[in-house]
Image (cartoon, rainbow over all chains, first blue to last red; front, side, top):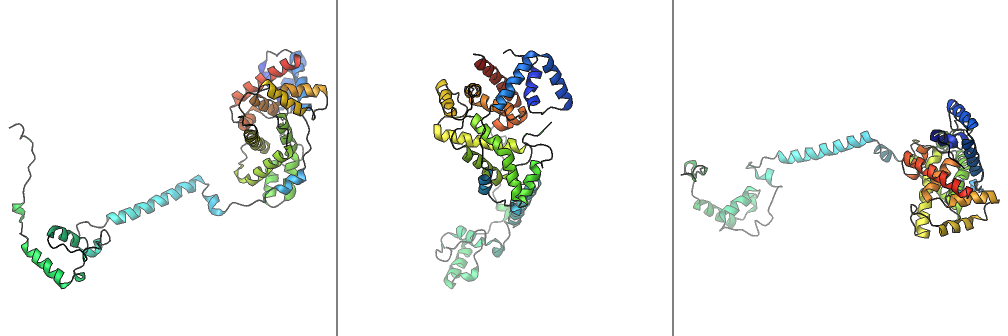
Length: 186
Length: 184
């Protein structure tokens, strides 16, 4: 059996067989087949192949009985399928996260209010481990939120003694660090 | 032009699906009766021999269980073929430990045809089935969907996960091979 050189027509033979051509296409292909012995033979072969398919009876009742009951998707599940709602949900989540972040950043780190800063790093070991010989560390601990009323009389006295040992440093005495530019050249 | 599996005044698949979702079991029966024979034909033509009923039933169960995922971009029947093909591939992988895309050899084809002997009626039908059985799995799927089920290349491409161009090439290669085998 030979192939018709008109590949377009051969391509449409199965569609002609299954009546899947428009009226105009069907007329065109039928006219070609009428004049082309190769396409007539191929169309006949296709028909034989289609008709030769093994027919199996299927028990539709049994299949239908096995089908699951239809369950409408829950509202949130359906909503999240929408691309627009997905974007909106992402924006809301980002806005919430940004609000929390900005709220934390709004706390002034130079504030002397120990209550305002207490949640950042409230040391739980200040009372149990007083360090009178380390005034700098002690001052830092107080600055981050220790309340003076939590200290015992002895601890307060020790703290006052330490404060008296501090030397006042005026702004004029602050060491000025000059940029090193030009030193290498001199 | 006709939609495969539907004729004349029959309700469209989309209408039957909507009715089933609304609780009409008769709509499900109509859909099953409309498409089950084609699914069984496709399974047999692709070499399935055992548990055809079970395969067709599993296809419908899976399809009806995920009908909300069916967007109607393809026909319902094309979608069913796609599901059935995946089930068939899963079954073959587990039973034969051989990927679907692998070429089948002469011995494999002969074995499949031996199993088919009990299903075919006459010598002419047997020769055709023998020729189809000797195609590669992909050629066979494409050829059967095109010739026996009347799918377009676009629908075939969706079903077998390929392009329309590749489906067309597979069809013509299969047609050439069938002619040679039948002429021999």
